[in-house]
Structure formats: structure tokens, C-alpha cells
Amino acid sequence: MEFSRRETLALGLGAAALTMLPMRVMAAADDAIAAFTGGADMSDAGVTLDAPEIAENGNTVPVSVSAPGAVSILVLAAGNPTPGVAQFNFGEASGEQSASTRIRLAGTQDVIAIAKMADGSFAKASSTVKVTIGGCGG
Amino acid sequence: MADNVKPRVKAPKKAAAGEIIVLKTLISHAMESGQRKDSDGNKIPRSIINRFTCDINGKNAVDVTLEAAISTNPYFEFSAKIEEASELKFTWYDDDGSVYEDSKSVAIG
Image (cartoon, rainbow over all chains, first blue to last red; front, side):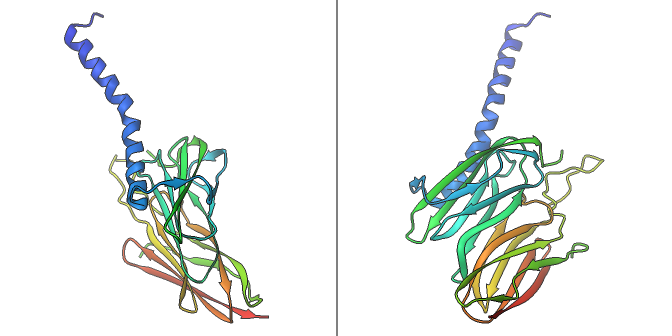
């Protein structure tokens, strides 16, 4: 099979578009982070994210977040079709600012937790979870 | 209202004043993400619980915004500080407008 000049060009463009695809998903997660922090700097300390290293089933992945002194914690899954997972807002009757839940992950990816502290600063933690079976159907 | 939605809450019956207690909640709900397709290839519309709150004597303890990435039968574990004999109120808000409620009381002792 021989490629004409035009076909070769189209193939190249297709390959370029494919590599751009994950970038777009990451951009959606970045947008969600920017909407939450308003572009403020994030420190690495102050929030802990517990997630398994390997999840056999992406349909229920147990994660827990904890950030002493936080007013809210945003959890994102950067590789999901929609990156948002949950946002925990802690009120005056909350004890420790921690929560656990079970989430869906479409595939191997980074789970990100961002905490907003009472003084208005932000902290970020992320953890890579390997997923054997994705949890988004399809 | 979605079918067979049943909230369950696990809370201690008693706590010391000022103690931080752990609360566990589970509600049966399909949490249809809006990403899945049926056998004909049509997208199944999104139907999830989008908000969960817990109030203790009218004071908010936690207010969670849920997205489609929360698993079927949403489970939450969190903590709350008990100062006095308290009435705990748990509320789930469904996409279709339904509200599911449960309550527990915690005594001091």
C-alpha cells in the first residue's frame, strides 16, 4: 500500500490529534482547580489523601482525605471523563476535617485533593491509582 | 423518586461532652453517571444524588457536593464534635428533586 502526499499528511494530523487528547482532559482538571483556588499558590503540606496504589475495580475505589483546619476539600480525578469527584465543606459542628468515600475511576490516573484552609491558603496532595477494570461503563 | 432508596446511618448512642464521634452513612442509589450506554447505544441519562448534608442541632457538620464519579450506593465516613445531647439530621438531595432524610440522636454519658 502506497501513501500519497495527502494521505501521509492526514495520518500525521490524526496522530497529532490523538496525542493532544489526554492534554485536553488534564486541562479540564486544571480548570476545576483554578475555579476552586482562583489561581492561588498551593503548598504541599497540610492535606493527606489516602488512596490505594492498585484498585482492581474502578467502580468503587475507597479514598479518604484529611486536612486539619480546612474549611473545604475538593477531590478530583484527572483522568475521568468529568474530573470532578466531590467537594466536602466542613461546618462549625465538624470534628476532625476528614472524610472517606468510594469513587469511580475510568482508568489508571492521578487522584488530586485540594484543601482550602481557614486562613484562605490552599494545600494540594495527589496520588496515582492503578486501575485494572475501569468504572465508567462503555 | 428513584426506586428503593434507603438511607442508613451508623452513629454512637452515647458520647462524652466534647467528644469527636465518627459517623458512617450509606444510601442505596444507582448513581447513574450519564456516561453509560444501554444495549441500543443510547446514553442513559444522569441520575445521581448531588448533595449530602449533616446537621447537628441545626449546626452544619459537613456539606458534600457529589459528582458523577461517586460510586453506586454513596458511602461517607466523617466526624462530628458533640457538645451536648444532640439531634443529628442527615439529608440527601437527588437530581430529580427528591430529598431523603434520616436522623439519629446522641445522648451524653
